[in-house]
Image (cartoon, rainbow, N blue to C red; front, top):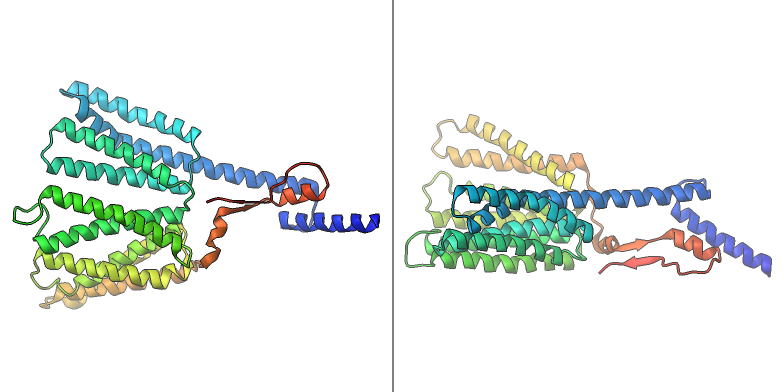
Length: 381
């Protein structure tokens, strides 16, 4: 009976070792090496994300925090320059210390930077349109930047990188759609007429963007297919190509602002839907692949423009013809790049595994009979 028990325990330990190491040799030394390499990879990824976070916040310090702080506190150039230098330099040390005290994930890194830019921009636009003084504009902009960073760090907890990127995409597309709608209905942005005021236009875009955040997050969280950061990049490519294709219908005429806005909005929406259907649902694109798809689409569009100019010549509708060739070239460039990259197939509902961590070494320790707690699975909400 004891021999049978020892045999079963040996089989369990051996199976766990096979899961833990991909090689044929299952020695304790190699098992320790695999564990060390995994830990080193996780530590390297953590350092990279912390570095990106500090880099993004430092850039914000030089471009948003510093200028807005100087405008808020300074009455003269010397004082303003000193205030700018203090805030710009301090952003590096503050973000570095924050990254040491808080776990920086890909989602937190993406959302903290993106929401800081967008919230500060909205605060700047609203306060400027309301004819506020320089100090008030600086104070609102600085507060918007800090608020955006804090909210991004809070919302990014527990999200994947793809969910964070989709959240930002939802904001941007909704805000731009709101501005296009204002242009269609009101006759133009920041134009004196009987329609929306400047403050109303900015507020409408901000409210639409807030709903867009929620819509993007909901889409990525409830979709039956996996959504990665690269997938979101491809949706922006689709929006651009869709707007380019729609512009062929009006390029050779003399459209007003409302016609241009409506045409570009409809074309970009169709482009997003097509890309989501034919690329996002089928594949899981990495950031690298998303960048190459954008490059391939740009290269194809440039070739199409060249061909269009050669073919159109002095034709009456040369602009539309040229943009048509550019659209076809961009689609062809994306298709050829996709064929070259051969991205991995979409994992569908298995995307939740990104939140699951399995520790096979604990199975080995548990099978050895040593006393203690050995968690095998961890699921992050």
